[in-house]
Image 1 (cartoon, rainbow, N blue to C red):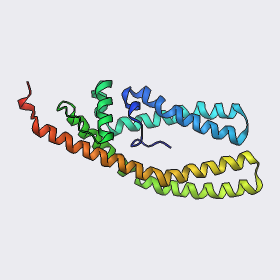
Image 2 (image 1 turned 90 degrees about the vertical axis):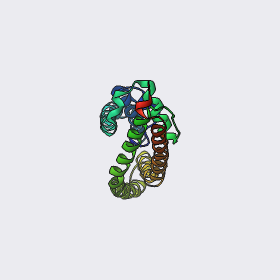
Image 3 (image 1 turned 90 degrees about the horizontal axis):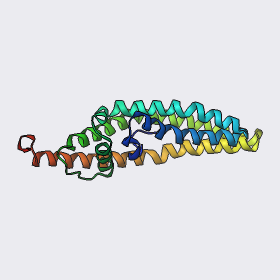
Image 4 (image 1 turned 180 degrees about the vertical axis):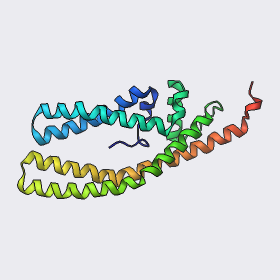
Length: 193
């Protein structure tokens, strides 16, 4: 479960393919490890990795592109600078990139708002994971029980840790956007050579 808001800045440095690989491969490895723990078969882990990595990576890369379409207009170095400054809440100080900082900060805020309903879905899945973990503990094999409890832990982490992290990123992005607006006021476009 990947969040566009929490997607690391280095993922933005490349184009859509790098974004798909940067988000899909880690999730595929993570879910493949779950498949290995539960089934005990490397082939199951490989199938999960080969199926879910591209599916998840493409889905997240497309969502990232829709969230911040202006990213395509920046070269890799500028895009990385904008993402880094915005996620840190820093003043980039570059009037040329200030509009991109404002745009990216707004994209993060919009994605965060869209994901609020997702919390209810994760809470429902966590409840189901708890039931499954209890069932597997009493009637399943040890690998199934371990995998079930790990899945529950991931859902709980998603419910408890992620919202605070996303709120912090959005708050820092707001500070960076405010700084970018000040930069634009100090450096109006008509005064630039």
